[in-house]
Length: 224
Image (cartoon, rainbow, N blue to C red; front, side, top):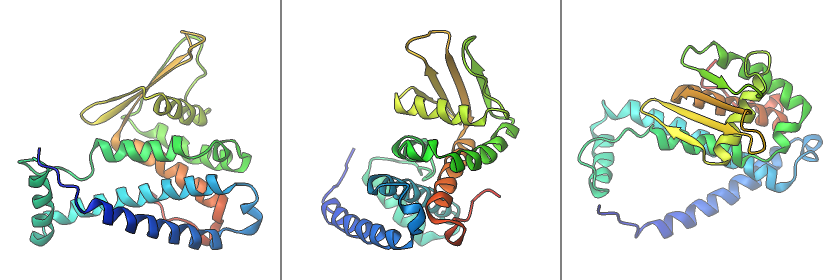
């Protein structure tokens, strides 16, 4: 595989400069009353997760545009060939969703998941995931139930699974496995499609955004 990293140092410097500018601009936007609830580390963790959501949205847009844009297709094909691929590689693949899931559910600090107002908002949003026919949930005899009446248990289990790298990547789904190390009967296996994982991550990021910035700076959801 022929990988070339010569331009990465320059690109990384530019990313660091842009990241610092984004952090300064975002800090000015945060409502003072809410700023006191989160420290700088927690605020930056949210910005990282928000950036990954933007990245996935951009990748989806590029994938849609590629088939009708010869110039864009040529650029992407050139990078694929340099990286040793002979066929087109979908930009929106398992790695993109896994990166977003880790950023949204693990990299975000605990503060966002224990705030009572955020928990209520996130719970209302996550309820919709149980209407997805591709969602498969199995639990052990001592596990808390995971359904519409306890939607945040789904978030907790998926978050634990990602944090312990206990995820199976399948062709079109992810299987999240979480087991209580102190009780072998307390386990959960949750299988979700890529789209459902993306929806869950978006719900978390939208909720955190509302908590930090309020309705005046609300993110637009991809899924209504």
